[in-house]
Length: 135
Image 1: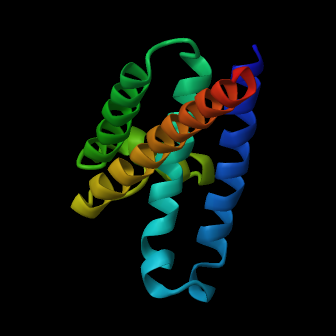
Image 2: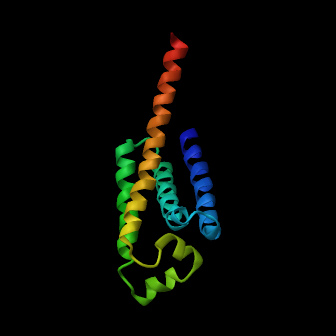
Image 3: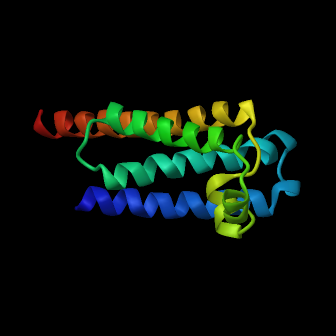
């Protein structure tokens, strides 16, 4: 349960930072303004997937996150009135996006990889603490 709460809190913080990156895009260096929102969206997705699938192997959570992120991006190639109607709402646009970009797939990979790497670093840090406290 504690792990789920941590994932949820981190997802909320990541979402807020991601929204801020979109809101203040012009104040960021151009590279960050262009890509940080997509990287943070994917990191948030990884954290939400980890919240839902807490206790599952890291590889499985990573794979589910990548498949979902890529599926959302590929879905942007489909433009029917019903889905474009959803995309025209604020929440729908934030979740589903608007137009397919190859660069978004790279951003999603980076965001999810950052989440995986952070979790691996935390595991290593915990192991090191346990080893030092025992010896």
